Structures are given as C-alpha cells and as structure tokens.
Image 1 (cartoon, rainbow, N blue to C red):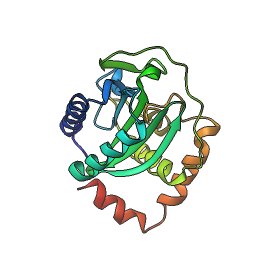
Image 2 (image 1 turned 45 degrees about the vertical axis):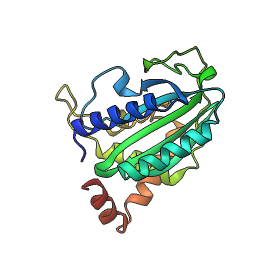
Image 3 (image 1 turned 180 degrees about the vertical axis):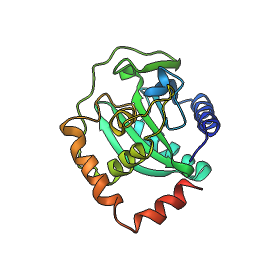
Image 4 (image 1 turned 90 degrees about the vertical axis):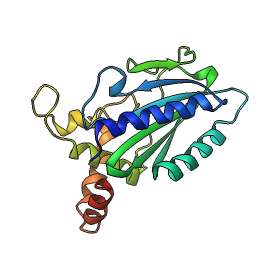
Length: 205
C-alpha cells in the first residue's frame, strides 16, 4: 500500500508538470483532499485547465505517455463528462490518480470539493451521471475503495459505502442506482482466484 508521503510527492510532481506545460493554464485539487488532509486511503484527484487553442485529447495523450513511462502508471478507464475528460490511473502500491482536463473556458468547480491551485476558474454546471458500463475500470476502483475499509481519522470504523463515496472528483455518491452495477462487477470479478495474486503483486510493488 502506498504511503502518504508517496502520494504527496506524486501530487507535487504532477503540479510541476502542469506548470512546465505551457498548454496547461490552471489546476485545482478536487475530491476529498481538496477539503481535508485525507488519510492513507485517500486517492489523488487533480483537474487541469487546457488553453482553448489546444486540443484536450493531445494534452491527455502526452501526459498519459509520461505517466506510464515515468511513474509506471496503468490506465483504468476514461470518463468524458461535458467538456471534460477524466482519466483514472493506477500506480504501483495501489495509488489511484484521477486526472481531468477541461478547456479553460469551461474550467471551474462542479461541486463544493474544488480548491484552485493556480490559474483562474469560472462557474460551470454539474456534469451528467456516468455510463456504468465501464465495468472493469469501475470494478478496480470500487474494489480498491472496499479494501480501504479501515479506521478513519477519528478512530472509528469507516464503512465501505462511505469510503467508496470519496472516489475521484465525480459529484455522485456510492449509494443508489449508479453504483449498483459497478459494485456488482467488483464482487463478480475480484472473487475470481486469478485476480488475487495479480492484485497483490501490483499493490505491493
């Protein structure tokens, strides 16, 4: 399992990449770490504004190549939402990194969990709910969240549902119809024996 220091170092490295990339004109922390310090189970959620003169797809492609090469990242799935594209990465030792890229004209908070790090942000409306058919990627994400059922900052026991609700920058919750398919997929896929040694090896790297 990753250490908090590793997650912080990864965050700092990604922000350095953003500031060095002239196509990126803004950045914000989203998700749970935007409003509190988090714990050892909190993943890393960052969103970036891309200059309106640049194709978001090209920036995402270049960043993905660099994360795969430099950080040994694996792409789990993409989630287009309005003008934004979310890409979920899994790094060694089960560090989940959720990055989103949005044209600068549409860059801004989609909920209360948004902390601007540099650049400017406007006002945008919330995105539509996701398509739950991305079963494999969702299975990995929710299974990881379920593994995070542990003692919280207050010393109490966190439920799987409350842990899963902190996943990523998306503005929906782990309860309700949108989560039943991914959670069922997680149960179905990760009970299979061949996933167990694979997942253990990856999360212990």
